[in-house]
Length: 209
Ligand code: PRP
Ligand code: URA
Image (cartoon, rainbow, N blue to C red):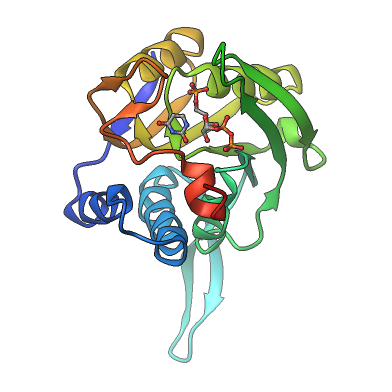
């Protein structure tokens, strides 16, 4: 069964409310997306493996915990996932970054992959898969399908706002991944947009409305 974390932290909820507000402009929208990604990522990385290392402090030599083991790859789903990358790199600055390009057909709402480039040895890394919006779940499921085909075994999917329909579809298709959601919204509308949502995340990040 998937590990699902839906955040209830007041800082995350406050920032998501600011994101939703249609008077929030491009600059603030970008800053908020990054900040929320960092807050969510802090929790998502809680289980990073640590080992003990001998360190000499000015007082004595001691054994101290350091992060070891599997390395991280950050993989945004283009375009909107790009907005979250810097927020995660603030936590794991040495992580490699891959990209998966996916767009939703405006009529059918089906996802179409148009680009993919992943770091080497991706199968040995834990992938932080980023997309601020989980609507029907089509894009997320297709991106996880693709990563698994490349041999990835450990995936943490992070979305800032999810619809119940998308969350169900994702965990049904991929019960072995971890899913982190900033807020679970009410539903999808007839155009498969999240309600109340925040509109089109990519357009709001890049100012392409
Ligand atoms: C948005 C969003 C997700 C997808 C979610 O991307 O960033 O990738 O829709 O919808 P789904 O769960 O129904 O698949 P979009 O296709 O609008 O592309 P963009 O990021 O380039 O704007
Ligand atoms: N993509 C978005 O950017 N917003 C939605 O509400 C649904 C899909």
